Figure 1 (spheres, rainbow, N blue to C red):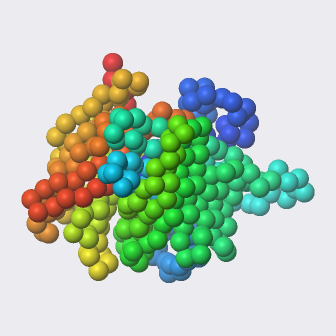
Figure 2: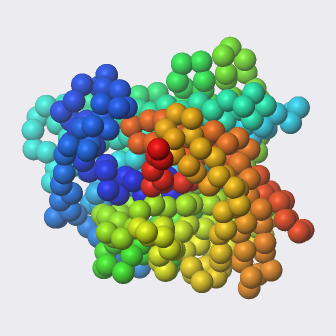
Amino acid sequence: MCIRLILFILLPIFTMAIVSCNENKNSQETGNVVQSLSGNDTTGFARADAPRNFVFPDDFGPHPQFQTEWWYYTGNLSDEDGREFGYQLTFFRRALSPDKIERESKWATSQIYFAHFALTDVKEGEFYSSERWSRGAAGLAGAQTKPFQVWIDSWSIKVDDKSFRLRAQDGPVSIDLLLNPLKAEVLQGDKGLSQKSKDPGNASYYFSQTRIESSGSIFMHGEEFEVSGLSWLDREWSTSALGEDQEGWDWFSIQLDDGQEIMLYQLRLNGGGIDPFSSGSLVGVKGDVTPLKAEDFKIEVLDTWKSPETNTVYPSKWQISIPKHDIKLIVTPLLNNQELLLSFIYWEGAVKVSGSGFSGKGYVELTGYKPQN
């Protein structure tokens, strides 16, 4: 769930910095701005406090009555020679106010958009990441329902006939992908209401597309690769903040070769321990969904990796057990260094999955880990 966890806390602060700061600020300068500001007023925004009726495809579009939302794509792809790539393309919308700006200026808006693009080149051991942000005005960035699209400048997700098309480019690295879902949308949590703590309204509306046929082109330094594989979409919106005792989030999306998918997230508590509101789901071959509670699964760290850039120590190998379903998996990064060194620093990367009778690929996101001396 991305930087998702950090965004619950920091994006309301960061968006104020976006409005007032020069766009050429680097990540370190932006980080200092974040640390020096405070405030997270949710007055007037809708809350995720009860199950709702989801409507598709409308719910792919924006929900401006809520403060925060995101469109979160990850995927594992390969070319005809078996060269492996992982990618992430994520768009965030953040409202500064629940009220529409009543000004005639084309620059007037209460909406901020923010995006991350990352690419893992397994063969070369290279990881690329970049970000863009903009106000949702003057055509610079935005989201709409019919036809669905979300964009910042030339980065975009949009409906193309019955498919979704993803495009992003940063310098010599770009993707142009066409995505076709193979299963129906999965409502996470309680019929799509994903509770994050015991506090009322501290939740999101959350659905996923867990198996998406993907094909298209990756461009790297003048070389084009025709690729195919599988992608995953997480779609959430909310007006929320983490509980005071929660420090981070480990999120797993797993696509098994036998046609099943697994989503798990565990909320880490300050001082150790796992929050009982950690959750997940098991999606069967035909799309049947089994919700998983915190007591239904166990995630054990088998190895760690220390970032040479930030001195942050991240888990880098896991054993996942879901005893009621006779599932035991080993999850290993395809590349240890998949740390995004952006305005928010976190680890998110492509992984491989093995186990007795199991194999597959997936993505893991790690937030809330701190640098060590």
